[in-house]
Length: 99
Image (cartoon, rainbow, N blue to C red; front, side):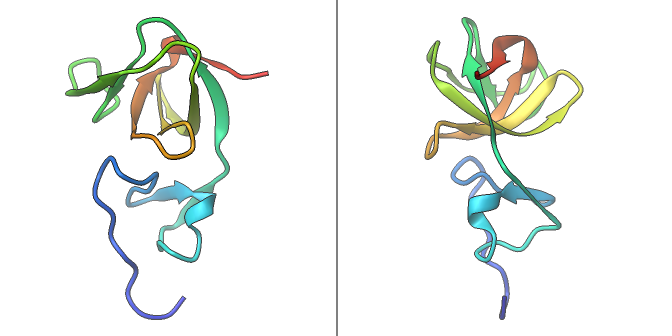
């Protein structure tokens, strides 16, 4: 890469200061890139701005949809709804690994 990296608006792309989706390598400079781990959304899943129950809710997630997990910390997963959906945190209790 040459020149400064491009910054992204929070919630628009699966990129944060320390990690980004592997598809963004070469476009965004971060220390680590991750291959998404597909999970299925369960009933009651809420996408949040941070990995805390009291964090602002972005939206309710549709049951059965794919949530692509890029990072897990404690009881929270950070990732993206589908391939082009919103990005945020979901409680691990509300998603399950896809088969």
